Amino acid sequence: MLVAMLLHGRAQAQTEEEWDWCYGIGVPAPNVQPPELLIRGCTAVIQSGIHRGRNLVAAFTNRGVGHRQTVQRDRAFADFDRAIALDADYLPAYDQRGSLYWDIGDFEHARQDLDRIIRLKQREVDPGATEASLEPQ
Image 1 (tube, one colour):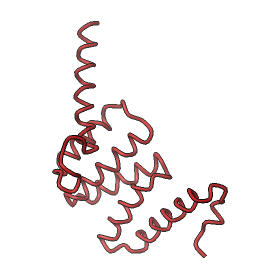
Image 2 (spheres, one colour):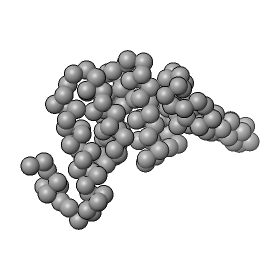
Image 3 (tube, one colour):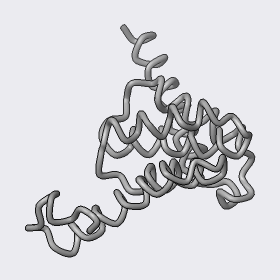
Image 4 (tube, one colour):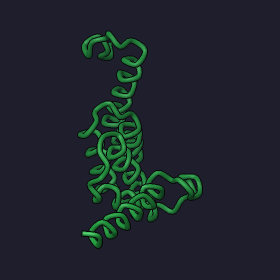
């Protein structure tokens, strides 16, 4: 039992370090952080099964950013899509996915993600607004 507790504690400490890599704590700013470190840290966080909610959504989004930086577009799209599936109101995932659509010249999908961001921001300003009232005219 003691061995299991020690191993679990060690694994959790390692996951905390990798969470720091995933979220950029203690490393250079995200725009100069090696994307491989970002991907490695976020992959460990996701696979740990410890994190839930917005932490998990942020890990998928951040890993997608790493994949985008290393031009692994399919993996980036998969991570952004997974983040959005977990939390349809998470603006950074739409922002990153829309930017990736823009990068590849898919302007219609980029516009759709931008429209979604606008509707979510409008809902922040007017929480009583319905989805229909936020549709572009």
